[in-house]
Amino acid sequence: MPSQRRTERTRKPPTWTQDPDGVRRNIIAVASAEFVENGLSGARVDEIAAKTATSKRMIYYYFGDKEGLYLAVLEEMYARIRNFERSLDLAALPPREAIAALAGFTFDYHVENPDFVRLVMVENIHHARHLKSSRKIGELNLSAIEMIREVYQRGVGEGLFREGLDPVDVHLTISALSFYNVSNRATIRQVFGYDMGSADALKRRRACVIETVLRLLCR
Amino acid sequence: MPSQRRTERTRKPPTWTQDPDGVRRNIIAVASAEFVENGLSGARVDEIAAKTATSKRMIYYYFGDKEGLYLAVLEEMYARIRNFERSLDLAALPPREAIAALAGFTFDYHVENPDFVRLVMVENIHHARHLKSSRKIGELNLSAIEMIREVYQRGVGEGLFREGLDPVDVHLTISALSFYNVSNRATIRQVFGYDMGSADALKRRRACVIETVLRLLCR
DNA sequence: CCGAAAATGTACTAAATAGTTCAATTGGTC
DNA sequence: GACCAATTGAACTATTTAGTACATTTTCGG
Image (cartoon, rainbow over all chains, first blue to last red; front, side):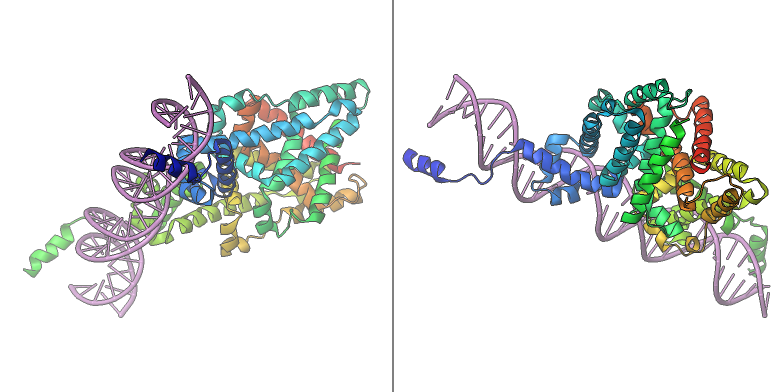
């Protein structure tokens, strides 16, 4: 009965529609939350699969194994911060305002993206082994240092900043103050009873970080 | 044959000698290295047991379970930094030198104790859940903030430091700069190709951190 | 010396976990 | 509309892993 078979085929609605890209993104989003919350060894593939709109089978189909999935999450995170950096336009601002803006935005980015902070912590625990193995991140070419160098030289030229500083140190200072503010909240809270996450504390700390960086640079 | 039995007992040398405290310390030392290297979920009890002079049986005998062992390691680490803090005597120094010494020693402590840094990272990933459940650490009472407050007030009194700063911010700044310098070495190296761990980089960074803190405080 | 409690050794188990097998369905292409 | 590669589903497996049962040895007080 060929005609019957055809009608069968024609009528039967798809039990599922293909959506490779959507599936990938969905898996990465769920996995991201799990890795951020539990670390690489702490995250469970079954748990990730369960929270996904798809199945464990697809995780292995697209990402090979658990570490492949983790790497994809990591690359996604770094792609985002790369975008954040490219969105900054410090060249348009006078040196002092440019540094203040950079420090402020960096501080805010960390506050608004604790997942990024936690994933970087996780990756450091693993000695950045996965970053190392990533081709994508190798060509990432974060430009933070160069941006700072440009602004710094302008500032020195204007007699505003003191000479002899290394842009790397400026970057490390901004990053350290911004990163620690999010990364170590939990232990600080337990040891000192101080809540770095409160709106009040954040506001004060933000101003203090900017002040710190400016004072480091200005004569 | 009671006499035979006695001679047996008398002659036979102990196949092993009891050493509860030594066993505990040995387990904690080995476990410490494993947790620091692999995190809480990444560390393997069997691996720890294998590297120990004793057996897995003893781990459970003394520490109950994996988390109990982790907690013991954590408490040990915090006891040490507590000792470090108590060894500081800032009251004897003039304000400026006191702050410089505090920043310098804190920086050095982190550099010399990367294990402490890594364990604090691990604990933060777990939202400081174990610190919270620890009675010992509850009564730890780290005095860093109070020490800074004392020095700061002296400095303000002498007209050396500017007014209106919170000792908490001073502490957070010193800690952040010292902590990040060790905690994020791996990712910084991969992303920027910069080796924060080299003797040269450490020397420069140390000076920069002290300078940063002094500039934050002085008028 | 002897009995009990503390400390240790050996072998085992139940559950969790990463990864696989085999087959079915879909969507485009000729 | 038939074929083929890409995609998805469901059940299964081998291993790892935290934790335990049971027996034995050591230490120490009375």
